Image 1 (cartoon, rainbow over the protein chains, first blue to last red):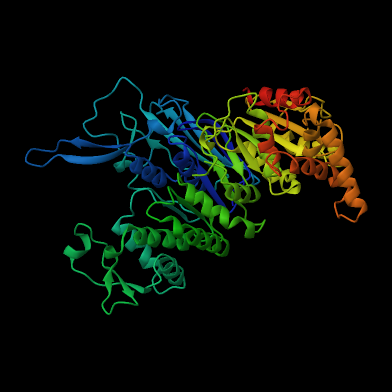
Image 2: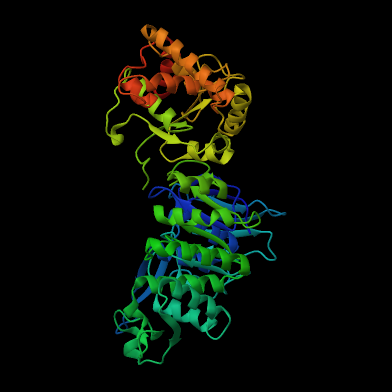
Length: 372
Length: 217
């Protein structure tokens, strides 16, 4: 587990330190205080600067474009996806020397990931990097993104940026995702059918399936079982479909499509599978209260805390909801010191968060003290 | 969303009598609307002194979002210096420049972040005693013979076997005297509001001054 993280130059954070982290860390604060950026930073750090992870982060933020390249006559133009890199650097500008770094300080040697921009050397060639098609010789040198992770077994290959400062999907296609420890990132958007089905295929018929079922039953005691039934192509991908997941309810003879059961169930499905899949690693959940009524949040936190301890998962989540913080505080009196629970209030422009430990959260809940 | 929503200034006291006494006293000196939502500060009740002196309790109050001023009003009881040191230690991490010992006018400190923290120990920041020790001096001068009678009556009752503990004698005296007022047996807070206890007494001035300086009212 990371016990202390330092962020320099990533997005809105110039210098930011967050010490005294625990098993569960709930980030609160006003809109735009940087809560999601912190989740991203943890993700980048724990993945040792994996370029695919960065790509996903930029994609989810909408920091992407499609570049259209005309083809030979009678061939339709080709669209290539490109993720914009500029906004992850504090100051929103790309120059040689622009960099950010993220460190975990509790480990020795200290673990750090550094992203830095430099110029492409005059006769430098980077393996696997495609210079943009239709690219005339440009008077400006091209920029390269160097990713350095320490300690690291091997240096990561540099990434050539497009002339507009993007990472082209062409240039990462040949890479292999590097992942030493599992990291699951649940964003605010509803999980896609593909994501859920992909996760399900790793869990089905394994002990972890029980955790998922238990999680769904905490929302609706009527649920007895969940299964994936073969459906036609139409039914998988049709609007509003949920991939053929069926749920057996005690009260009904016929299985019910999971889509009939509301967004909370889908969200809890995603969340519980994510915890099961992040054993020994990290779970990141943006706006963890999404789709969940306040009456089920205590059950959700109990589930997450128990599973996190059992599976050795470190959890970082964000929320705006008072009930979400309050429910987490309810499990604090019984939390053990080896598996701390913290709430961190992130204040825009401040170099450190305002932390709350489990004793303080217990007081805050009892007295309705506003920690957000 | 809690009851404290929207309040940036907090006073922590031990019990309801303390709370209503503060309100009853201060409303003769500053504007204090009837409706709770219009109150100039939020008054929080600690369940016990031990709870108030618990570091997690104080730190959570100080760290509350949007709060800029936190004050504590406690009985000195038998060890005012000890209680003050305990509070001072808990607050040290918030870098309030607290005075070494509690001054007669009460403690007020402001840290570099702009937050203010204050401490008042009833009755006068140095003597042993309680809220009731303080309130005794707000009994109007014209009531002196009746007050004397209250003290003597309470003592007679103890001689007859009344169970009031030694340390609670000031409280017993005050409530005895209050039982003979019009209306009989009202709470000290109401007695202050109705000027049966005198909120403008010179004895109350140091506390009023401390309160107004801390909360800038």
